[in-house]
Amino acid sequence: MPRFDDGPKRATNLTLNAKVLDLAKELGLNISATVDELLAAEVQRRYWERWNEDNKEAIAEYNARIEREGTFSQRIQRFLAEQDAHNGPV
Image 1 (cartoon, one colour):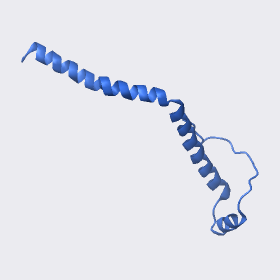
Image 2 (tube, rainbow, N blue to C red; image 1 turned 180 degrees about the vertical axis):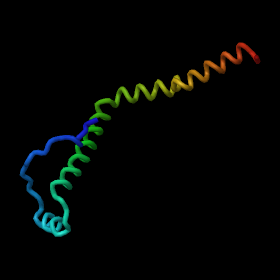
Image 3 (spheres, rainbow, N blue to C red; image 1 turned 180 degrees about the horizontal axis):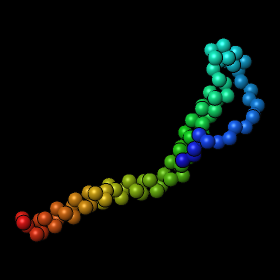
Image 4 (cartoon, helix red, strand yellow; image 1 turned 90 degrees about the horizontal axis):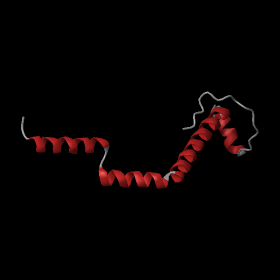
């Protein structure tokens, strides 16, 4: 997962809607911090969107296996239940 909290800052030029920018300044918004937060959120959203798309097949196979075989703990529970049934009461 990408982490951005300790990344260095770099100056850049942006072209923004002048009316929005003027009102943002009037409201006391820190434009750089606001854009940085929103951009980081969008980058993370798109990162996970791509990750899910790239791993769609593996996720589907994993889910099918869990549906077919159960989770690890479910398999242990079945094994223990079979042992109890086989060995009888203590």
